[in-house]
Length: 499
Image (cartoon, rainbow, N blue to C red):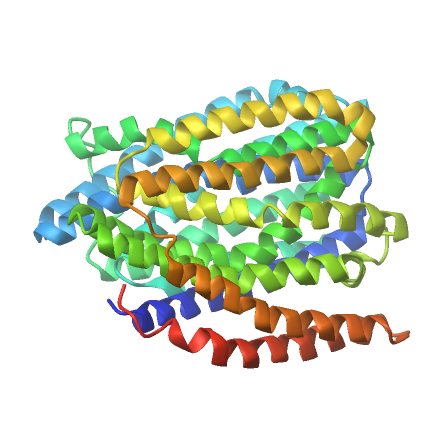
């Protein structure tokens, strides 16, 4: 597979993810208008972002990660019938397991509510319990949707597998328009949206001759292996999710609307960076699994170099833009209705600090998938346990005196350290991929980055009253200059080599 084909897959994946994220951003704009950063917003943020958005999707991704290497092995050996039988059996057992978790979660909803929002006002507690029970129903569909998405990606069906959150965001947006600040209807819309993510992929899944369910065979050795690998993967793959949950809980102690402030800031950070980081890692994971099966470490290193060249070309300008326009971005997206100037100030600080997590986010997405393709599941797990524990203890020591900013700084700093450590461990596994070629590429990025930054500074000296022009004029001009200079200095050379 050459870089041109991989780049096309990346463009397809990133384009569909971008469309979904844009709709999701519009959804968040409507949401901020209705809820602002008050108690109701914090409660919804804690429940929605803890369960469907972070915890459940983390489990769904883990199930997809354990499944993809086995599918690549079946593809490599040409065992089509065994592959189809295994997939149906795996999906059936996951559905049974998920149904049991849903029942348990609904029963313990009052306990979960107290743990998640210990400072919640008494009048909101019944609402919180009801929302938790509704949200738990999404667990079945999230798991099935992520497993099937991974299967489609193995077969190079990236467009459908990465576009399923489009109807999800549309359904929630419609709920916000029709029912305003009714959080119960919003919760039902969330559950319906996740079911759509599953049903939308189903026709494409069946066209590949797969079947969703069959009589479960609990003796299947590959499914047993999946469940053995699941715990290390879910722990290793939850570091960002758990750290963000911890941050929101501590933020809730600092101020009444602290959880909502962190929700808005982290959501925008994950939206802006995730479009490209998730797209690249999604496209690369089946290739890394294939090269790992064949022990082609030179090809693995080539894929890694391609990934980092692509992502650094995007993340470095993102960091500069965030440094110079964080307040303008937050104001443009959120400032309306209940979301006032004070909310803009608070969220822009958290958004800026979290943006430096981007390098840790890249390392997390890329190297976790590398270790999973190599079936070294315990490496990300041990790192995750160490860093989540450290994050919790650091927040515990600092949040009372340092306020909201100290919570975000702690997490961002830890993720920078995390990126260094996991990079060293990856080099030990597959060999040195941080070559002079990659370093030269990064150094040459300084040319278009410098030109773009000078444009931004020039616009900062001009007094522009219209806040839309004030934001988009420098971004447009600076972005065009960056792309043009970057194309001739760097970007056109990415496609030449094979991965």
